[in-house]
Length: 185
Image: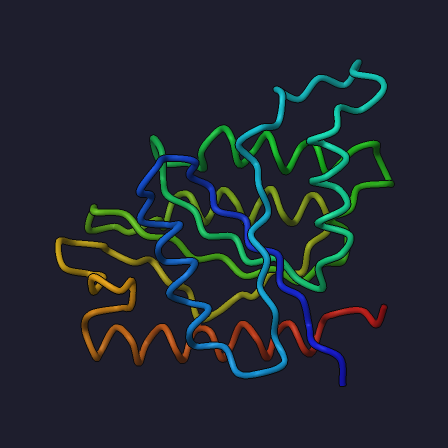
């Protein structure tokens, strides 16, 4: 069976982003047969329906989403919602109407923040947006990660054993979701 390709969209473009670190750490829990690719969103212009022809970064984004069998969203929470850069990327790849490339792609949502509520509000908003663009999104387990000092080892792994177990189980559920919902190419 060919490998399943998972596009990874990190909602933070900050250097040293804990969500970028989390995205890399999660990949360590994947069994063989899954390939992960980070989809770049930091170079996209602001979405404008009048832009024609589409800029090269938007065409690249759209192609990377098309090439993925599923999408893993790893996002922080900004002001109780998703970062603008993430919403901008979703908007770019959702147009033109009825020709968006997100449609039908299975998705998983996870995120980390130093706050005790994790990214619960951001993930709820993201679920609403992804439903609108037609992505079947894994309903559970949900994962709202509080990322305190010492969460990652110096090598980028998850430091605590109980957190590693939880994230390994979450990742197993996500990959099962992908296998069940991914469309044959």
